[in-house]
Image 1 (cartoon, rainbow, N blue to C red):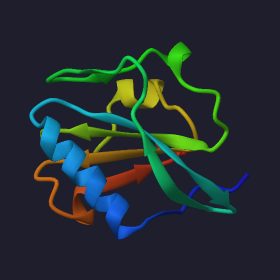
Image 2 (image 1 turned 90 degrees about the vertical axis):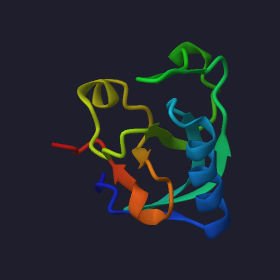
Image 3 (image 1 turned 180 degrees about the vertical axis):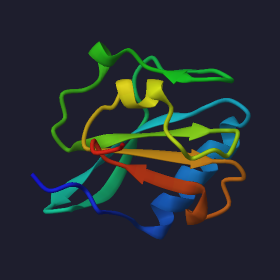
Length: 121
């Protein structure tokens, strides 16, 4: 299967994502991304708050066994309050779905978001 090369998010959803990061700052946030995959593109259509999520200053956590059985979940989004958009080894070891989005401070616009697929090196 082809690697993900594009993640599409409409402007209202993008605003909601950035506001979510701002509202929990300096703690981390985590959201599930629901959408559709078409070849090398994922279109994010909805955001879900995972069950039993805990927000900390250095991580956000949800028990993986509590995630819903929803085949439209394309991946996860979480924040790095430091502004660093590079995934940590923990991020990569807990990769869920097809795509990982990381948002970072100052949560101003699309330049504060990075997308990664399973081919992250």
